Every structure is written in structure tokens, then in C-alpha cells.
Length: 413
Ligand SMILES: C[S@@+](CC[C@H](N)C(=O)[O-])C[C@H]1O[C@@H](n2cnc3c(N)ncnc32)[C@H](O)[C@@H]1O
Image 1 (cartoon, rainbow, N blue to C red):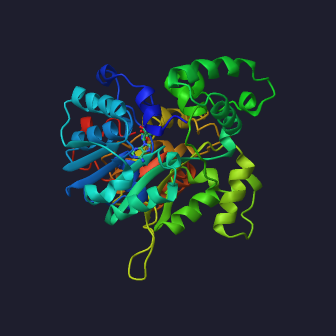
Image 2 (spheres, rainbow, N blue to C red; image 1 turned 90 degrees about the horizontal axis):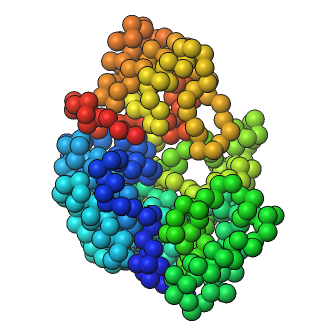
Image 3 (cartoon, protein in one colour; image 1 turned 30 degrees about the horizontal axis):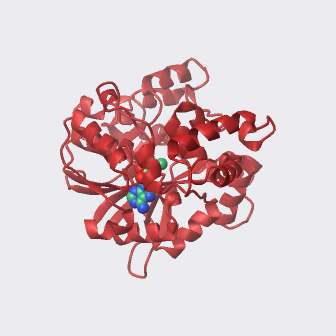
């Protein structure tokens, strides 16, 4: 079997060219500071305080670059530690940070199992890594041991149903290509995939595209030697066993059973989420923010932010506020995509005046005043906006850019 280190030294994933840093910033979930604030600190973090960050299994650098660039642009004092097993992945991540002229990132080569030796952290990013550990719970435990009080983590782990077709192919390729070098495995697996028939679950699953995007994508999806997935139930049980609790998924709507059945039923929360995952059948990854499990004397999960509080600063993610407001006023479909989920958003035209003024710096109270709405009408419109957008991760609250320039707020994600 090719080890995880050999795999990512041969095919660092995702494939990235440091020269592209001059053209774009890769924005994603988890680990945009605005999103972190919304889910971990109820949108009320004091960003004048330094943030200590661990990027565990940082790979070719998407998470570390997003964090370092966003915090630097917002003028937030920070220290970031990156760790990964792969030297080659680290070299790419380092070159991307250097290309941007960013400081404040310490690079380490090693295992996240040693995270507690690196210090304690207010925020831990671990995206697409924990499901590649031979003992995944040990990874969850190591990260928990490195978490500072009041901190939290953003994780992504694979989910089984949206990856249907992947695991039979990984198993077959693993058996048939045992002992070959990574390049030979890739060539042989590509040839075999050509002959996989049309009805194979991998072929009928339209959500699996990484194999076509790059060699690294193909290898990561179909030739992994150490890969498991988590149902939402398994994820919650692992969090229970390892000292964590769920703060929120980045798109809670995906796990909301009532959106699929028309009613909530009287099942417990976890059973409802498990049924929603099975009914959807398309969830490929769970992207979640997690915090320390509540102990007798510790507060429970913070509860996500609400834009209904007058002082909170709303952000629109994945949509341009002016374009959204214009479409609303014109009665057109909202220019938003919801991660492949069939969902329709509907908002009253009057909400356009508020949405158009969302700039990542103005508070809800300020936007309401500037719109000329009275506070009662404004509050009821904000409630509608929040109910429609927040469950999809499209409306987030954070004072990250409060009092800072427009340039810093641009690209808030
Ligand atoms: C799928 S990549 C994800 C990279 C990055 N987090 C991202 O989202 O772009 C997985 C990375 O985890 C690293 N990795 C796997 N097991 C690890 C471990 N025990 N400690 C540190 N890194 C690990 C691999 O070397 C690889 O770079």
C-alpha cells in the first residue's frame, strides 16, 4: 500500500501553482474568519485580540493562505502554525504564502497527532484530513488537546452517500495495483476506469468530478490507501467520544429534515439529521464548526450568530449584495447557487433596500436606519432575510472588518 506521505509527496492535493496567487484568492469553507466568527463566537469576537491558529494537514495551502491573507488584510494580529506530513505539499503552501508576501506563518513537517506539542490554539483548521488517519479518533483527540479555552475548529470530513461509487473502486484498485509506484498506479487505474460500465454507481454519480480535474484529483479520489467516510451519526458519536461537540454545520439546511418531509416529526435532533442525510443522498462532505464538549463548569456550544441583534455586522457570502437586491426588486430568480441542493429562496421586494447595503462593515441597526425603514419593519425584514439565507451559509455575522476600510472587507466571502 502507498502510504499517505508517499501519496501526497507524489500528488500533492489539491494541485496548486503559487503563480496563481497573483490572480486570485481561493475562498472556501471551513476557515474564512467571518464564517468562523459566526459559528464559533456568535459573531462577536473581539478581533483586536491576537488569534493563534493551527492548520492541521494544511496540504498545498488553501486554508493557510485564506487565513493568513484575510487576517492580514483585516489587520488582525495572528500567529499561524501549519503542519503536514508531506514535504512537497508544504513546499507549495510555503511558496504561496511567500508569493503573497505574508508573514506570521510557521511551517512544520509532521503529524497532527503531535498537535499538542505545537502549542494551544484559538482556532484549528482541519479540512479533508481526519478521514485519512489510520486511527481517526486519535486525530480528533490530538486536536482537542491543542485547543485553547473558548476556541473552536473548522473541519471537513467525507460523507458516504454523496461519494457513492468511490469506495468499491478504491478497494478494487487497491487490491489490483498493490506494489506499484504511484505513477504506475495512476496510469493503470485510468485505463481500468475507462472500462467500468455505465451503470456503475461511480458513473451514475454526477457529483464526483475530481478524477477528471487533475492527476492529483484522480489519485485523491480513487487511489487513496487510507480513506473512510462518516455518516452524520458517526461524526456526532466520534465528537462525543473525543471531547468535542458540534457548534454548527456550515449549511445547516442540508441536515434539516423538515425541508425534505414538510414536517419536523418528533424524532431527536440527531435522528432527524441522519434521516435528512439519507433522504438527500448527495452530501459528499460534512463541513462543520466544532467546540469543546460542555463540561460541568464550561458553557455549552455558543449558538450561531443572529443578524437580528442590532449591533451585529451582516455579510453576504457567495452573492453580490447589489446583484441580489436588483434581482429581488425586479422579481427575478435570486442569483444564488446552493451547492447542488434543489431549494428556492423567496424574499419580499422590500428586503432589497437592506440587502443592497450589506457591506461587511455596517451593523444591522445602521443599515436599517440608512434604508429609511422604521425599526419594527426593519426587524421583521431582517428576520425574513435571516431565515432564508443563514441556513444555507449565505448570511454570516462578524465584526471582522468593523471600522476598517472597504478594501479589507472586499472578498469577505
Ligand atoms: C486532501 S489533503 C487536504 C489538504 C488541505 N487541508 C486542503 O483542504 O486543501 C490531505 C492532507 O492531509 C495530510 N495528512 C494526512 N494525514 C496527516 C497527519 N496525520 N498529519 C498531518 N497531515 C496529514 C496529507 O499529507 C495531505 O496533504
